[in-house]
Length: 206
Image (cartoon, rainbow, N blue to C red; front, side, top):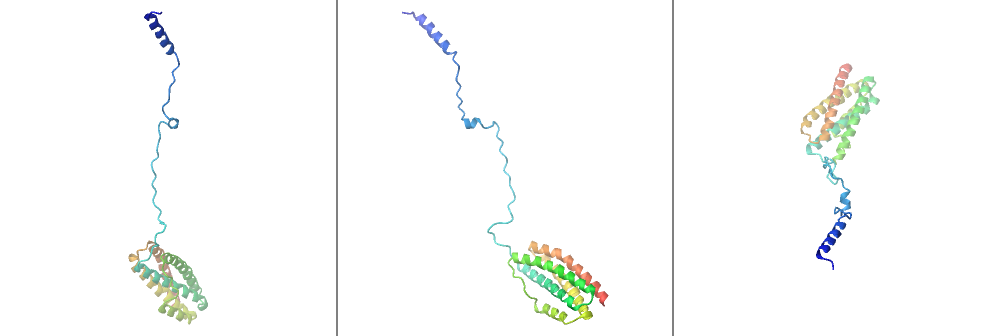
């Protein structure tokens, strides 16, 4: 039998031999985490302004003041278009004919733009002139030559544009619809141009 000292030495030798085995390191971090970079930058959220068009929202409508102005402005343009289209059959003046063509072009464009705004607000488009405006159309339709020129420039050129400009100036501070107000702002200088030209022609015609 081996002595206790021998047994102790053998045990120590066995432990020393075991300590020379390669160590196995166990990674306790899951593989999917180990693949993530050490520093992760999260982008800040980006906020955008909401769209001005809201699905399902009720369409914009005119106030009573807006409706009144839109109707009167439409009638004013309809009158200028109507009388300017009579001129080619009634005048012999090249200047009057050119003035009528300008009125027809400018007021047709203005009326088409106004109609688009009115339709978008659900407002009915006037289909006929009121009685007093139609009476002027009928009166001009019965005159010819110099008499037509004087009446056309006096009524459709000077008086109608003076009345329309005054109506625009009085109504615009109370018009609340932005698109309608912008339309009026753009067309007011055009009407002033028409009025100035009418005064020039009136002086020339006598």
